[in-house]
Amino acid sequence: MVVEFVIPGHLPNLNEIIAVSKQHHMKYSTMKKDYTALVMIHARNLPKVGKSDFVITWYCKDKRKDKDNIIAGTKFLLDGLVKGGTIKNDGWSEVGNITHRFEVDKRNPRIEVKIYELDMANR
Image (cartoon, rainbow, N blue to C red; front, side, top):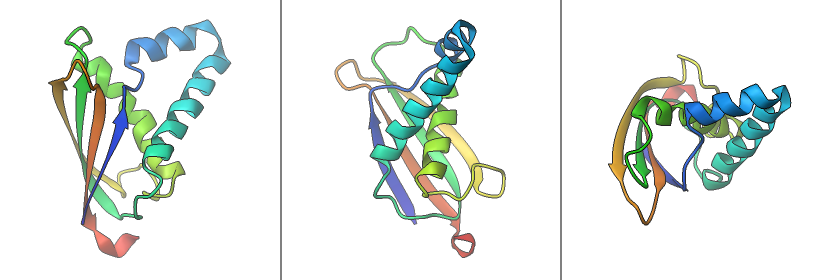
């Protein structure tokens, strides 16, 4: 089974996460809660899946941010899928390979996620 969904906009990059974490210990907690909820909202109607591979395409508004900073948003993405019940956990038993792709779309920045279920027996 292949499941797809889109998150409009962007998720925080590593530099933004670090900057917020340095301000106050609760600011990161709030950031994580807010962005995890954002993912849950956009993934709310997804079916439950067992162990899966993920292909994440990051459509950025420009090329100013380094790719290694952009993929830090994967944390919020997987946590949102767990909290929303799409995946049981985000450990090695549930998450196979994660492939990242990068594109530029100035008018419509977004994150497109494809989930390729590998193990339908572990639902």
